[in-house]
Amino acid sequence: MTRTPIMAGNWKMNLDHFEAVALVQKLDWTLKDAKHDYEDVEVAVIPPFTDIRSVQTIVDADKMGIVFGAQDVSEHDSGAYTGEISAAMLKRLGCTYVVVGHSERREYHGEDDALVGRKAKVALDAEMTPIICCGEGLDVRKEGRQVEYTLAQIDGAFDGLSADEAKKTVIAYEPVWAIGTGEVATPEDAQEVCAAIRARLAELYDASVADAVRILYGGSVKSSNVAQIMAKDDVDGALVGGASLKAEEFAAIARFK
Ligand code: G2H
Image (cartoon, rainbow, N blue to C red; front, side, top):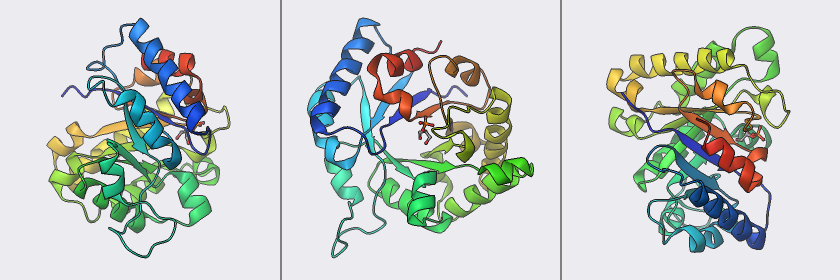
């Protein structure tokens, strides 16, 4: 099965809304100049909540172009949840993607696999695509338990999802030791775990789900290393942090071929 690659830029807690407009405008121009084919490689930007409306004003008019998403979502629909943002709010703004279970949410906000699964479910219910993050830390990698550890996260996050729902998800394998450190996983490291995740989806559901789900690699992706990672069979794109904050660099990542 042919899966359309996704290059998603996770801006994390960077940029104000003026800077967001400038970045997405420059990215849009750069990709247009390069005659980027969005059917060939999908490009998504995932700004902080406060920048989503600003980004929308730049890219909304262009249906075949950059899409955007959010870095998190509340598991609740609405009500007295101070500081939370609901799936319906994000959908109304035009978000295509919602990142759930990023390692920074897991580490600094105590999010576990069950919560990640519930957040994926509310995103799906609102007709958005969750990007479900997983990946091991350095200690686990040193012990050689990266596959076992990451598959346990997958089991937990997909526990409440039907096959039809699972098929609509995107998974991002992000080894924590490679995030923001400049220490990228080798293409073989990425392939090992991404292939194991795909095999687990076939066990949990069936081959059609395993074939359909796009599995991204994340962790210090740059224009200089993306092609080797993308050459691996089970890697269908990248979740890019630091390198997505520069339009030309991120555009070069999107044009990895
Ligand atoms: C991993 C990644 C984006 P970076 O967190 O999700 O960040 O590319 O800066 O390692």
